[in-house]
Image 1 (cartoon, rainbow, N blue to C red):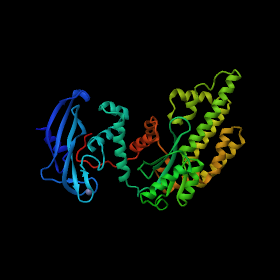
Image 2 (image 1 turned 180 degrees about the vertical axis):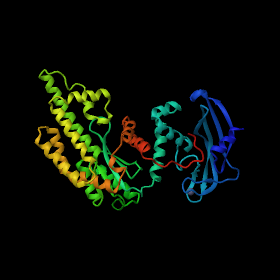
Image 3 (image 1 turned 135 degrees about the vertical axis):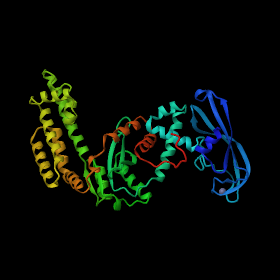
Image 4 (image 1 turned 90 degrees about the horizontal axis):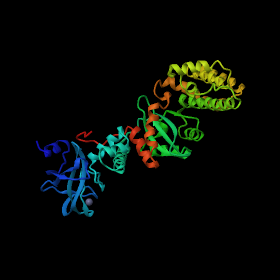
Length: 425
Ligand SMILES: [Zn+2]
């Protein structure tokens, strides 16, 4: 069997034929070789004008160009082709458009190779992909970018009925990204990423929907956010009839933050007063959910709860707050929430009091969780899961916002891929 036969099987190109492949020694490629496959236009075929997409006669032929193709057995494969210039009746003399690269692109990567690298970049870091295939980091970036840009143009947005909005810190200092997810049922995907966490950052999402011809008011029925004021304002304005939910995930995160603040302050105080370090290494005992504690942490917690400390009082109050989500009726959940807030407001635990005040302010949005649960049993109410959080991590390392954005869409966007005749990976 010839290499040509394989190429025609995995990568047939209409209007073009593969000619004899040649093996060249080449120190720039893995194992010191490259396989060069010369291509030519099928005899008598007319090239396609890159300006208008119409076929036209050949004006002249440009010097040979090389296009990287997925490697074979650790050997680099390169397609070599001399582009024709087309004498187009409409556009004048134009370079032809070839099917193995994006129309109008000056890329030296075939779409097959772009897709190949982009797929690998879902499993490995971009640096690892670059190292594995002897390419530059930039090459991997461009491959992923091109595949993301195709995906964003071809994704379907009409089915979005529930969204979650979240902000994450990005890079050093107080830089944030606003992320919008689709949360209907089992479909969780990243829909939008913008810089910052202002009202404007979130408005970008609604602009994007409008551009894609989606009427947000008509289609989005549930929206899930944290207690960030600019988001709350935008939601009230843009989605007045959707059920707006403050989800459990963010409330618990805030409660844990309050406990941690109290613990840190108390530990410092005890140390200053010369007491034994009872709070030493208790952070995770206090912040982890009980079923997730290790044997050792469980014993440590039990021990700790015997002391009369601000920290233990705060811990027990947060445990009581957790019970809120065992309710199914919004009315009873409301009573529990009110009682909890009253109790906390009587305490001298300032960070928890601050939380209680904000929970009171957003009481209705918190209780909407129970309304949504009744009508919309799964998915949305669980908030952002840990897997999604892990997905950001890969993007954190990128210095520029653009690269982080591309990486996030690629990892979490569930974007459609270009249709191909063959899966190289
Ligand atoms: Zn033309």
